[in-house]
Amino acid sequence: MDVWTSKRSRTVSALPALPLAPLTEDKTAEIRRALEGLEPAALWWLSGYTAALAAQADGAVRAPSAPAAREAAAQERLTVVYGSQTGNSKRLAEKLARDAESAGLAVRLLRADAYPQRELKNERQLAIVISTQGDGDPPDDARGFVEFLAGKRAPQLPDLKYSVLALGDSSYPQFCAIGRRLDARLAELGATRLAALAEADLDIDTVATPWLERTLGLAREALKASTPRAATVTPLRAVAQTHASEWTRERPFAAELLVNQRITARDGTRDVRHVELSLEGSGLAYEPGDALGVWPTNPPALVDAVLDVLHLDGETTVAQAGETRSLRDWLLGKRELTKLARPFVAAHAAQARAADLNRLLAPDRSSELGALLQSHQVVDLLRAYPAEWQAEEFVAALRPLTPRLYSIASSRKAVGDEVHLTVAKLEYEAFGHTHLGAASAFLAAREDGANVPVFLEANERFRLPRDGARDVIMIGPGTGVAPFRGFVQERAAVGARGRNWLFFGNPYFDRDFLYQLEWQAALKDGSLHRLDLAFSRDQAEKIYVQQRLRERGRELYDWLESGAHLYVCGDATRMAKDVHAALVDIAVEHGGKDREQAVEYVDALQQQGRYARDVY
Image 1: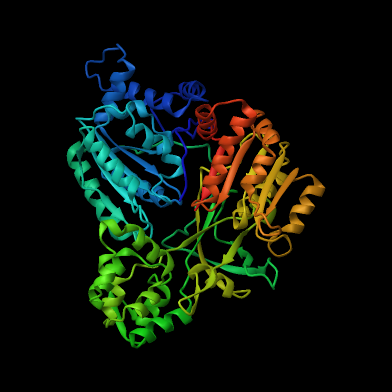
Image 2: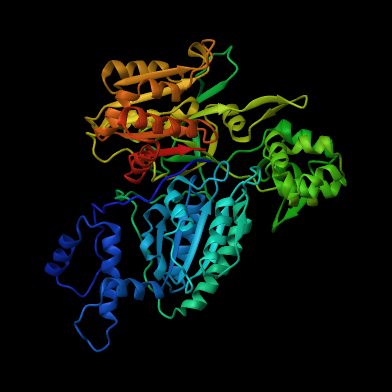
């Protein structure tokens, strides 16, 4: 749910230890010195160059040309490219790369903004895993890749075999639009589908797992792998080696709840919580900018309401996919109830014999269907279109419950073996009933000492600059301020010399000023240098952060010209787009650029890794 980020060039500043090799210690040290500081593109060229040299059976010493080396390497490998906003595409792409390695394939794994576009014409086997955000937008890290393929510079690809896994959310009208677009465009360029396009909804693995297996099987057959090869993974940044944790998305850690404190006014309309969890003994290690995955359970009152409207007994035993539990347990912890999806609408329309509901599934009614998916929960649809469901059929028709990701609001250097979150409890009235969000209600209801199942989701695109002397501009209205609390803590802990400037907004100063005392203390002790506020409803004219950006445009542009990094976190559907437009306007007004030049300027900030977004 975002806008765009173009291809980013990363310098490999810290080389991993070389594996054992038939080289003397002096030769090994020599190679390390020669490779130090080379960018990924140069390292890829060298890998193809040396591989082609080794392949010369007659021992000739004539070096192949760089294009020939690249082409030779491309013919023998599977390339996996991913574009990921919340980490799901990355997770699946990494799984495909690991499985391909285990199957004996040469494989390289690349984030879309690190993919060397000039090499596309040499590819022979390509797998793409990509999500769609917001209103049919690509993930931030895939904008350049998508634009390149759509543009005139994209080469004809008659020798390429490809497969696309598209991730999306069927509650949005442009479901899997980016994956569909790439799949169609590659075919238009003459490439052949290795496997058919797969479109995964929020219950990702039900579609992704068969796609992964089929793509790997077909790639293995095409490449005719015979001997194991090491997977080649392009590093996106130098990452300090840490103790690998055993806790994952599939096997979450039971984190003890330490603090669950409301940080908005009691008489306000919004309930925002500051949540602190213990990670002691987990081995989980995060960096500022990462997210914490939380596995919730559905509100018990909602489960009761569903059982009531269907006249089903919650103690009924239901078996699904080799697992047996009571219907109530399925609905509490295993099935999605707060988010409505197109497949369930289709199933319920048939069950209820509701012609008007069924008509919403037509392609020309996508906007109306989208409105229904956004406004209704499962129970609302059950009430509006009564139908009889058997327990097993109902469980099978619902999507699996999925974890929710929250931007981490702390730095380990400041809080130790803890992780902090900023959580807005979703609660509203609709159709005569109170509605709750699954994870926010789950967290808001936890008491001190309770366990919360969690895992970490790294966000490599949203990192502080390595150079602590760089200035940082942070734009985070509402709960989007969460990661910037961690940023300021981290910069203070490491003694970063660069300045920190925060833009924050919310409806009311006296009700919604999240972490007010902390920001005031940070201003006083110098860990925060500037704070600009936009409280939209404290005056007749609504004021938002993008207006504050324009008002401070001259200074903001000067900071950017001096090398500052800019970060945006929060709502993608409107806020992030408005902020992006404001940045373009600032480049026009204060940079003396025309509109096209200003767009290129902002795009260049993204390409340089100096404009990053964590939007949802």
